[in-house]
Image 1: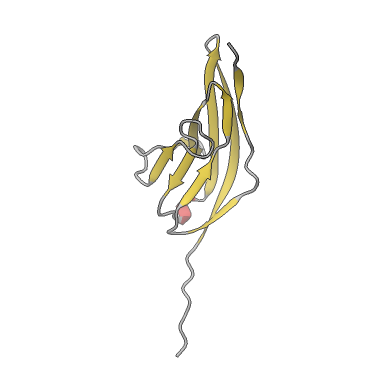
Image 2: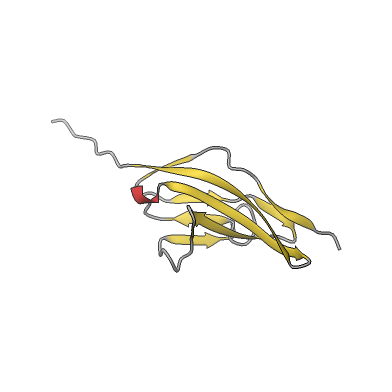
Length: 115
């Protein structure tokens, strides 16, 4: 049987999103067998149970939990987000790798209409 440790591709750069919009992050995780992906905002694990705006699904990384979606971003959501790919394929030893990205939230700008 062939197996490979989980790997995570680093994020290219920080992300910026406007307050009120939707944030989507894809964790490019792979390995054989596919690792499970867990998301963190700082040190806090993210899930729909802890924040109803959060959805964790199978995304472009194709590993379970590889896409993080947060609707209605607020300035309080500015943080480092980390995806952690975990697998316990090797003699009950958990192997994990991660990637972190800074998400900046910009305030909405109201444009004044001149008459």
